[in-house]
Length: 358
Ligand code: NAD
Image 1 (cartoon, protein in one colour):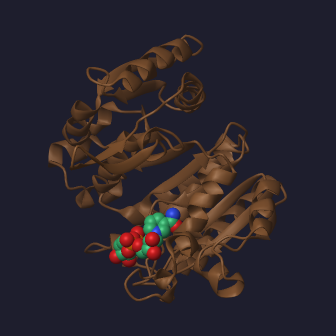
Image 2 (tube, helix red, strand yellow):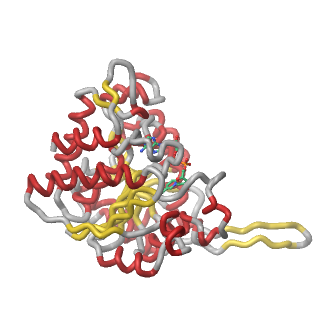
Image 3 (cartoon, helix red, strand yellow):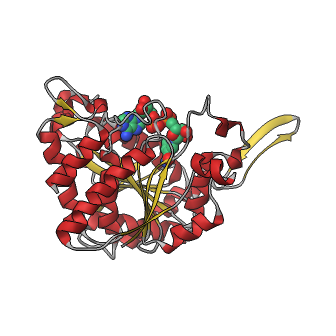
């Protein structure tokens, strides 16, 4: 396996180190070889090269089978990186790499672990049912990429944003959603606003067409306003939520919040090959960087997603997920998920515990 590694800034290097520890334990146990290539992106690249992502770094990412990333960026109020023009700041590197690698599908699992139910802000009876879903958001089309302008029309300032989707963009994303669902509980909930928007009506039609190629996967449609309610009312009903860029942006944060623990949530951005960029859902957490207290589980679970989606090693990925559950069951917690009666451990200790259980 050729894995590009973007450690990045803040807690990035600390959590990536632990994910590598777990991957190395897997490689030893299951007998596969991993070659890691370090790739600079974000603030560390600005400090060294003056830009958040060099062309060489993009080439190195392209040559990899997958990229494992920590996080990039610093304290947006105090870091000198944020005195630079927008296209030279750390986050510009992230947008650039997503574009360069054509990463059009973003996956964010939202899982409520039995052991962390107390952190769930939902009603007890809802939390007790648990939930395990993936939000699959289209990442390179829709409102965020359409033509936009503000101009004076008849003496009145008027702003215009355009929401465009072609059937090809919908089809390739829908295929990914069905492929992912067929590896899980075989249900896709396509979320749209088809009672109002033309783009949503096309979304629905193409998604139904794609569904015919996946007869073992159930497709249902849901309007986005209802989906926002259902997420807090009955999240257990969802397996894969498939939706366009802006709806997914909003719903995936809602789905993250109802787990109550950002340090546990992984994510993947995929293109139409097996390549993927895998990273925790959270940011670089500059407030706790360098203290060896960050929760590495989101990054470790991102590495598990990499094994599943890029390398088709579902059994090894499950092994990592089970090791995480085991360590939680044994009562080990980093400070962000700590509760009474549990054993508090550092970033490094948590990584070692999970690697041991693998
Ligand atoms: P953040 O996610 O970094 O931090 C929010 C809060 O969550 C903080 O209190 C932090 O300590 C905590 N937290 C986050 N991850 C944690 C972990 N693994 N373990 C324990 N606690 C954790 O969000 P922010 O403060 O809004 O952003 C900080 C920087 O991260 C900014 O520069 C932002 O642009 C960047 N950022 C990067 C990415 C990315 O690399 N993909 C994503 C989001 C934000």
